[in-house]
Image (tube, rainbow, N blue to C red; front, side, top):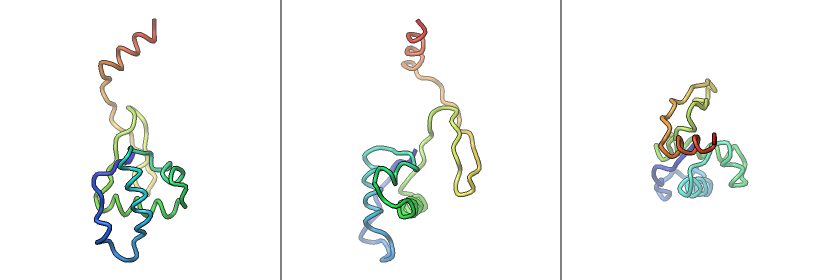
Length: 103
């Protein structure tokens, strides 16, 4: 999951930067954290442009990675190596829901 940390200063970006795509990606991630591969689909934009914008935002520290559900594997970086995210302790509501579902 990707979440927007901060908005980049769009007026101070280099001329070759894709300002439109950066603004669209930031607007989406500011509203709700989103899985990276869904961003091009949601924005109905070419994947190459979206991924270039995401890489630039991540490189500059404007986007951060959130941990997914407990025990889910995720890919790390461009290498595609699998890493296991740490398991999260179940909350009170989760445990309560699990018990009620077993009844």
